[in-house]
Image (cartoon, rainbow, N blue to C red; front, side, top):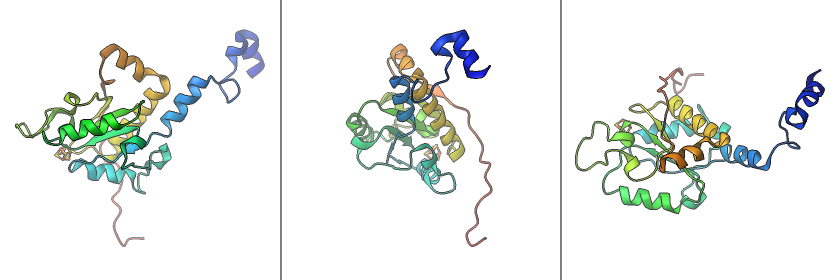
Length: 193
Ligand code: SF4
């Protein structure tokens, strides 16, 4: 019976969502998740992988994210890519404060998440001491695949509303940890056809 059967048994709730029956709230969440522009915030070697993620081979424009914004006022996601020095911490917080709500943070790599191998006075031992982190991407450095996994996880949480629920519970970031994904792509050799 298909759609008719669904409507007969469940009423209007049986209709799968579309532009007519979808709730405005769901449409807003969907649009937000697919137009979240990252702030340009590369701090160390992890930023090279972040740049690779934005380049043609991985192409995050597929997720509506190709526009890395230099102005925090136009950015939605802060990807903290690399170790955060004590000197940089207040600058990072200022950039975060200048971003408009709703805004999200991905901690990319072990250095950003915990200080990594830099267990010393110069490096912040976890960027969650400075800003609320929503998703942690593990690795040194995380592969572009891992970063995309973190981005897709974040998008899913934005779309489901789960991220706001977790924030209300913890009073901080959503604190989601994703699995590391090893590099799977074959290297592209310059000059090869
Ligand atoms: S996690 Fe590794 S690649 Fe990333 S900033 Fe630290 S040392 Fe560099």
